[in-house]
Image 1 (cartoon, rainbow, N blue to C red):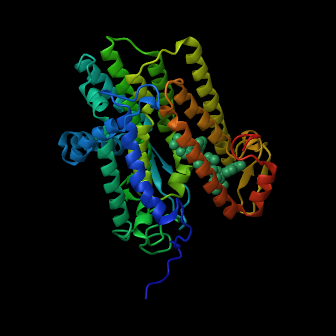
Image 2: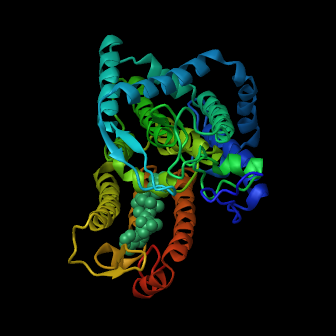
Image 3: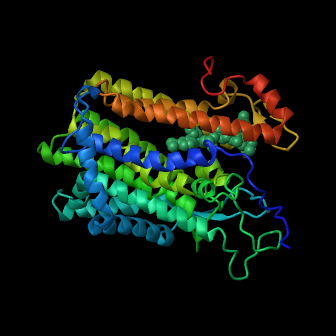
Length: 442
Ligand code: NDP
């Protein structure tokens, strides 16, 4: 008889509408990503608003998608991209940092080398610019084959999620054992229900790894985020070629705003180590698809829209949008860093609640204004990006709407987790800081 696992309790609470909900999301989200791509393409897009919406054009555009599985060039480019980043991640220098303590008392080490990877990519781009006299054929390929690449990334995410699901059943290899002395891998609390579809979607294993590469951390910060940056750059580059070296101010602005956000995330990547995605979620289709497809191919929608429908912002709009981004970033960055410094034992003069679990809950500074001021700042940033397309189309505002839903869902998950973890101390914190995200509103 097998011993009942104390390390990996069975998942009893289902999220996202359970098995049915995850099945719907598995089908609907990839279709949504492809349709969003179809709606803004260099060869056509839906003019201005939805008034000229022609469903036939979208479905016609979807037809080549069926032939994509055999499109070797697109596959070669995508796999080369993924493998090159894996190679850079492995060989380029960086510092090693310890992740949070896991359920068995152990912790994992992560290589933090975002700066080296960004420097290497910049060098490659600069050399390519010089060698091709600014023509950059690979950037042009990326610009004109986005639907194909998007579909390839969806299939890739599907395969990666299947791989991670299967290997989660293989016990720890060689002489490795967990701190409990068994060969059992640590599974995600939410991804061990026993239902194949649900666990595959949520992610069964908490930290799947291939040698030194942590698949979850790698996917979170490298192939998707970097591709998002490149797609934006490809839009700017295409405009530059098409308009004989001219630069459009709105397109430049979205490149600056999102480029800054991406580089900030990659250069401060150690911050991810304490985020829910790394500490709590398993790596399944949800994260694989989110990181590899949804981020690069839908977060770049504003730049793509502006590359086919350029608008001139002028100084007033340009600097108003920039100011909104700066305000959002200031709230987002300073609130996150205030909590992080406080948790490191600094800023001890700030008011806090001592919990029975040992840790303190900050209820001063940003953390007195709402329970997640950092989410509010992040949302303002998302709004500034949408505003670069001004009010010419509602399509690009999908991002702010989607991000608000994501943050709201995240806040509810976090509240549930903290309530379970801190009990009465959390209730006291909620009395002291009643607003959840937006002060005096919610
Ligand atoms: P938080 O940074 O808000 O972290 C929540 C955790 O912090 C809680 O679980 C609790 O953990 C601890 N905590 C909560 N309240 C307090 C307090 N008052 N004092 C001290 N500790 C507290 O959330 P996330 O990890 O979800 O997000 C981090 C950042 O990442 C946010 O700025 C968010 O906007 C951003 N983000 C961006 C995404 C994107 O796609 N662009 C996606 C998701 C997040 P503990 O158990 O340690 O007490």
